Image (cartoon, rainbow, N blue to C red; front, side, top):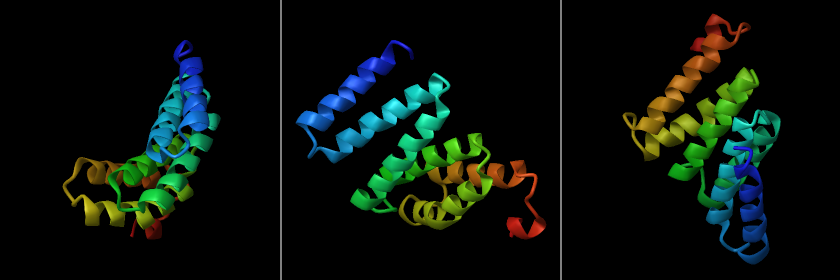
Length: 134
């Protein structure tokens, strides 16, 4: 990851400079950069990037697009790592899970993964009450 980071940063900078109209490609580049930052333990920077990618995918593709759902799932995992259980739970309950069920189906791998992340957000939160589970 240490050798990959400058390459990924340069890749993103070049895309930003020469291909700013290729929005999906730039978002994919930012996603790769966030993964690398996570691997390097720079999780706070990765979380910021994941927030940005998710917001931009929402604006470009809408919530029901598979890439938006995947970006949202990545953001949720980062939030759970930072113990931001309430924010993760809110993001999962609306808009991610309803959109995934609608557009991908209840048995799709991403939908099932989102359900698992919701369970983790509820189970791991020491302040979670019985009412939160319903």
